[in-house]
Length: 114
Length: 114
Image 1 (cartoon, helix red, strand yellow):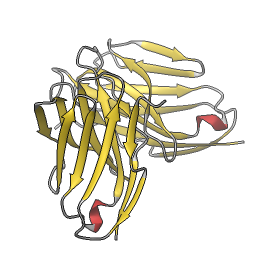
Image 2 (cartoon, rainbow over the protein chains, first blue to last red; image 1 turned 90 degrees about the horizontal axis):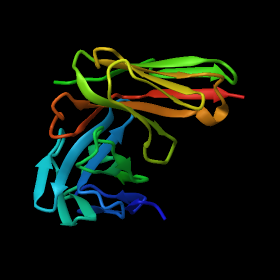
Image 3 (tube, each protein chain N blue to C red; image 1 turned 120 degrees about the vertical axis):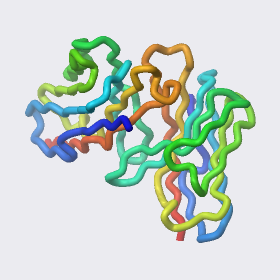
Image 4 (cartoon, helix red, strand yellow; image 1 turned 90 degrees about the vertical axis):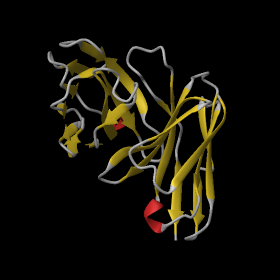
């Protein structure tokens, strides 16, 4: 079984709709992240959480919100989706005690906003 | 702002050729990682380098961290079609960046033709 899972894997929605992307992990890591990936722009950090009570904005948080329901679950919401939020979204986890801050990624959610 | 620049952006080679991908910055990083991403999947960690001048080998892949910890290279010997993918470098700031967050390069898209 995958250590980091994301649901759904693909989603097509319309402008103005509320969307939630979910991430679960069985790695026991305390840190979780949400990124979006766009061609030519690389991976950009949306939000990150170092534990259940510690949530922080990343580079591009406008238009997004998150919820850390438990150590193992971190969800990303688009309150009112717009077409330029069409992208590949990745959840990642890491462990605080590692020297190199390695991150482990889920398989991604491909979101299309029409 | 810490930035990581990768070059080349695209690389298309024949099976059996050697190649080198570069990751450069004007900032010092406490560690640097290389990931490979295949279409439709999340990035997968290949290696972490921590010490300036460090060289790590993973079968036909050789990773080097610059002496000043500002740059890194990935060399692939005798490339195979299975090496095809997007190669991403990521650095953790000297003092952990934003408490251990990673800064990603935009990636090198490698295509190895049989």
